[in-house]
Amino acid sequence: MNTKYRKAIIAGNWKMNMLVSDIKPFIEELKPMLPKTKTCDTVLCVPAVNIPAMLRAGKDAKIACGAQDVSSYDKGAYTGEISAAQLADVGAKYCIVGHSERRAYHNESDMDVNSKTGKLIEHGVSPIICVGESLEQRESGLTMPHINYQIRAALADVDMTGLRRCVIAYEPIWAIGTGKTATAEQAQEVCGYIRSIIREIYGARPARSISILYGGSMNAKNAAELLAQPDIDGGLIGGASLKPADFATIIAATGADNE
Ligand code: PEP
Image 1 (cartoon, rainbow, N blue to C red):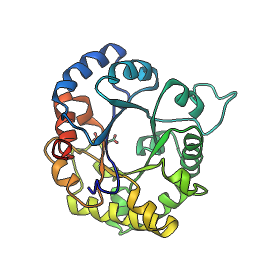
Image 2: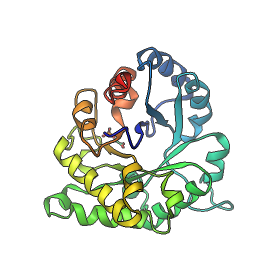
Image 3: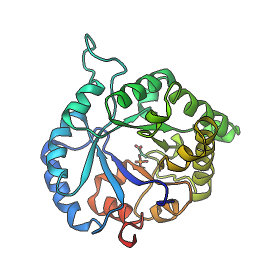
């Protein structure tokens, strides 16, 4: 993590967990455990119906609220969808795009990820763009070409101003929800590679400023080692973000108290 040039971000992904009635008790338990001075942005990406309650509960604790998906269309006859304008209107600051679960269960393509990214940027919501390889791809030596493709596809037509809003999350599919974390070296290697792709497309300064997160079974025990890597600027956290004590430990592992 290099907080001289970029911000540390710890983002929880609650997936399809938690009810509105769980939010206030969760934040009340979390708040006293948070580091006093936070240089790390803390975000909880909650189910869309929970966003207003999270915004109310998270305000005092300085926890930003994020969504987990957005429509790739502006408005109209898209039953069940939620637009970027609607997310911005309700107060969401971040939105996950291209999570591997959406790619796998909802056939989300790289083109969808690109249009969702564009819509979010247009409405001032920061996309957290997820990329990552399957175990098969890793074992066949295809990790880097796959990541290269996903990053370039997600950012096609995103200009320098748009890029400033973007956050990238490297999430190896084989590590998500499996308890199998990438080693710090594996995670660093890919996050460093992602930064080099950004450098190639946008130049040195944007590459130095963009926050790149690691996600995949990050927890209270392994967070410090992963976050100590030079190109890992934070985490996208599933399971451990549902437990206030674990989530607080991960936030503290950014070194937030010491800066
Ligand atoms: C995720 O859902 O993005 C994730 C990383 O989950 P977990 O931390 O549970 O592996």
